[in-house]
Image (cartoon, rainbow, N blue to C red; front, side):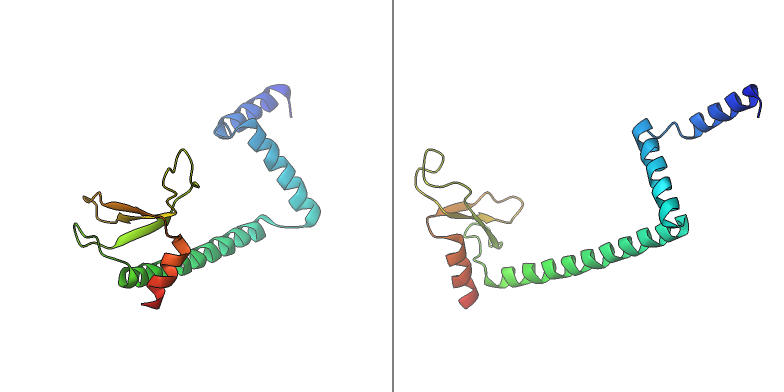
Amino acid sequence: MCAAMREKRVEEIRQKLSVFSFPRLQELVTLSNLLEKENISLKEIKEFINSFLELQEINRLRFDSEREKQKKFWKKITKKCPECGKPLDLAPVGCSKGKANKFGYKSYWSCSGEDCLYDKYTTREFKEIIEELRRR
């Protein structure tokens, strides 16, 4: 290949790959060398990626399903907001008694309603409250 043709080809490749950063192209070469050394085809890589994505989707669906079950269960056992009647959410307080938590609150209730600002702090432990709610 003559110099002019080689320059033209290099420019053509540069334009087509310009969306990738140089480090990404270096990763491509490293990956290509590894695949060649391990005798792994691009088709096998595509199949691997597809099966990985399918597994991720299955896990996401399971997670979403479990989360929905937990939401329904929580809706049954939680207290209702005294101001609007929506289910209250319960969360642990992140810091111990001190400057940021003068009264030693350990958990707090907050309304799940979009327009309701109700919240109530308590010195009771988060786990203790959850256990009590489950026993109801």
